[in-house]
Image 1 (spheres, helix red, strand yellow):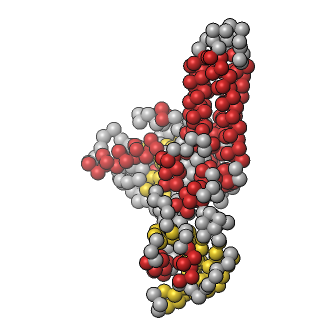
Image 2 (cartoon, rainbow, N blue to C red):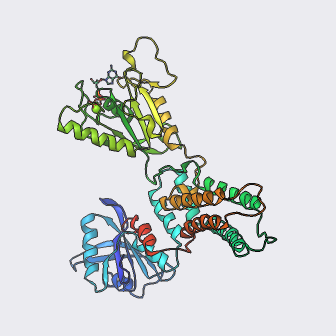
Image 3 (cartoon, protein in one colour):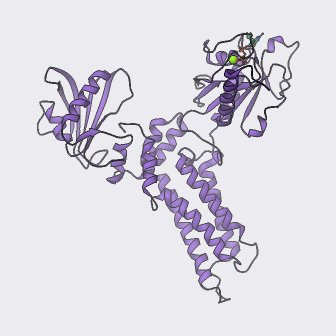
Length: 449
Ligand SMILES: Nc1nc2c(ncn2[C@@H]2O[C@H](COP(=O)(O)OP(=O)(O)OP(=O)(O)O)[C@@H](O)[C@H]2O)c(=O)[nH]1
Ligand SMILES: [Mg+2]
């Protein structure tokens, strides 16, 4: 990411809206703000003015001025609130870029400057990103904890405890020839590490080892051709989105739509629902072959599967169960079954009249949206990875601590595991922040943030 200069970007989503925002940050922000308006000697606060466009038209604008360092980025910042017309916004930006030293901001560059100017810690910057991307209350709560620094505080405490235990183990390495020196009793060390590990596991909660999205979880509808998948997709969405026909092999693509479960099941948020081509032993033609490959890829990356089978047998030739993901077995075309279907292992639905679609929605919410017990660390992939690494390091260290022993027989190996764990946590506490970590964090931001 380039640094320096004055940056400008649109800070609101693309498209038309009543108001949009253009952000400008850097040493020339004042020049930018004053050269297109009648404002002079800008003072902190909101100013109502007009922006001249190419000296022809002028449009009304509210300009919010922040003197550095008391601004988001720590630099002089101007925010322009103007009518949300993309043509006008681009024109304003073009004019700004005529000013020497002013250029378009990279994704996340405003927040990167805030970080470089000590206005935000890395974790707080991630809190900003999470707050923008948050889907649901739990992600918002996690963002708040990142932003208020309480999560960083906890990481610091873990890192300090680990550093202290590592120091004790290492001092044991230095004094191995003196039998009477026992810096820490193995059982004490084990107990302390167990507590620490429990806290780390709680931090990523039920997400330990699994993939969690800051955006919506993806649920795919899979099963044999003609199983009624597309009909179910449409019934869940409440619109005729996918083509339905009695020919097997109708669906040839992965079709995704957002399904909002919040309305029916408060607290569950929304998901990406994807309809797939049917899985078969053989392909009808080359298109079918590639449709099936797409389907298999999407099944592998999904967070949960809705497995449709009108027979209710759920013979697993495809090895879906072995994927270890939540599976919701749905007996489709329940209206064709004489008598009431066995509901112990599956939900019987009819896509034509919506029978038990509500029950299915609830199972979907249970499968993917049950984030209870999920800690802050679960929401940001970098945190989840670092905490997982720390857990692995501590596990390795514990492997070499024999219960009841008077001294550690392999203190070097214990120390090595603890050092790995400390390194992993160091990335979170900001003690170890290589450039590529910073780049990775801000690369996930949108332009204008
Ligand atoms: N009676 C009844 N028919 C259904 C039901 N759901 C789907 N069908 C019929 O089953 C046939 C196949 O439906 P689709 O939804 O296209 O099935 P699909 O699994 O998406 O099929 P492919 O995309 O070809 O894999 C159509 O003729 C639907 O009208 C149902 O609940 N009851
Ligand atoms: Mg289909």
